[in-house]
Amino acid sequence: MTGAARDDFGFDHVPETDQSFENALAKARAGERLTVADGVELMTTGTDREGIDPVRKELVLEAADRRRAEVVGDDVTFVANLNNNVTTACTTGCLFCNFKNTAHLFEADSDVDHGGFTKTPEESRDIVADAVEMGIYEVTSVSGLHPALVLDEEHREILESYDNPAAEVNYKPPEAYDTDPSTYAAQLDAMSVDGVHVHSMTPEEAHHAKRGTDWSYEAVYRRLADAGLDSAPGTAAEILVPEVRDVICPGKIGTDEWVAGMEGAMEAGLDVTATIMYGHVENEMHRVMHLDVVRDLQDRYGGITEFVPLSFVYQNTPLYDRGLVTGGASDDEDELMVAVSRLYLDNVDHIQSSWVKFGNAKALKLLNCGADDLMGTILSEEITKRAGGEFGEFRSFDEYVDMITAIGRRPVERSTDYRTRRPLDPDEGPHGPRLGPRADGTPMLERRRDPATADD
Ligand SMILES: C[S@@+](CC[C@H](N)C(=O)[O-])C[C@H]1O[C@@H](n2cnc3c(N)ncnc32)[C@H](O)[C@@H]1O
Ligand SMILES: Nc1c(NC[C@H](O)[C@H](O)[C@H](O)CO)[nH]c(=O)[nH]c1=O
Ligand SMILES: N[C@@H](Cc1ccc(O)cc1)C(=O)O
Ligand code: SF4
Image 1 (cartoon, rainbow, N blue to C red):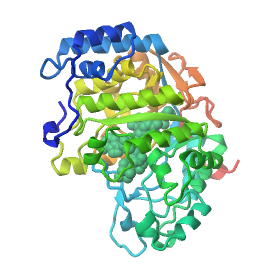
Image 2: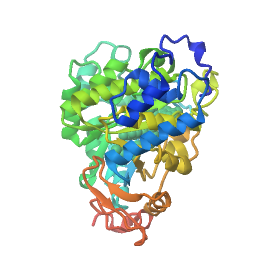
Image 3: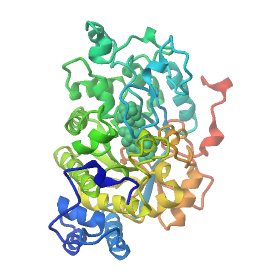
């Protein structure tokens, strides 16, 4: 069970079905497409029993592990990447999030120490350039919805033409703030150092980048791609069921808008990822309804490269402070979430196990429950850390090779889109990235940029 007193929320959707666990398991084993009822039976290990049945759970995990082996084999992939988030200033106020700081604290006339940050494009460029020198080839960038952040100067002009931009379109000019984040286009351009793959602009951020205009998501993502964007993270998904969003993120875009944003990104030719953030107030029916939205989207567009189950980190969040939850997902729930994702999403090849969210031991265990990807080196982490997560901000290639070989699988360095893959030989260390523009196999931390030769 999660820490939430779930029935306190009076949800319309509850984990009840007219399917049996045995039938659902038989369908999963046979590779048949699952219904929502099947998924709920597997996720709950049977709605006919209270709690998780340990024997049934093992049967679900085994079916998912077998499916993983059939679909992608025994390789475990990971990427050499950097997280560079531009700003923590946000006006949305999601109750599960402690990444953001209230945007008005960043105003030039505020003297409250908010503990957050806003980077200029020049600062972003320097941070990415240092990491490229260390061998990375992907930068992941997700940010708060800063009122001065706009798509580009044309977007700024439109927002400034409103009578009361702050109230009507959540816009305030950069002069109002202590640091000017400039535009999304300028940030993406700055982060595109040496052709590094820029993974950024969630549907929530794309919505912010089109506020006050009648531009389509496709048009916005095309402009972002022209500025340097290569693929988009499908975070902001949380739980794609309105009654759950009403509780945990009433200020956020709705389910339909998230889907429209993802469609726009794929129409613009970009790959996307999809996520679920679970283990808070939602129940197993909501989780499977979410999987159904993702599977349907993938049937229609086919551009989702991976699905990422993000286990809710509860410690420092408003949901926990206010007593709406008393904890996060249990180990059983994490395992079943990954396994049912693998079995339900028969059209998504890769399921990611996040060491940031789970720590090493559980992240490895989840590679035997249906997951096949172990995320990236990231070098810096703000979202989970600020929420109270304690699993660090970096994994080296040597740690990756040791961990993956320890569970009898083959470590493979991959590109963001999984199209380029390089297996690593455990006997030939030390290990470092080779796919990056400046990568030559040297371990990442040994290659910090020497400022004296930075412009070579
Ligand atoms: C922090 S937001 C940044 C990007 C943008 N503001 C947005 O909402 O899409 C990115 C994602 O981090 C995840 N996240 C935030 N707080 C979390 C928490 N406490 N535990 C787990 N995931 C969290 C959510 O899935 C959220 O959509
Ligand atoms: N799962 C988490 C990720 N995943 C993203 C990957 O690291 C990477 O960007 C990938 O190549 C996309 O395909 N990133 C985080 O910062 N935190 C996570 O929990
Ligand atoms: N950075 C997000 C997670 C994330 C980013 C990009 C992805 O493609 C997937 C997940 C977090 O830590 O929660
Ligand atoms: S999840 Fe994103 S939109 Fe919501 S408060 Fe956090 S940073 Fe802002």
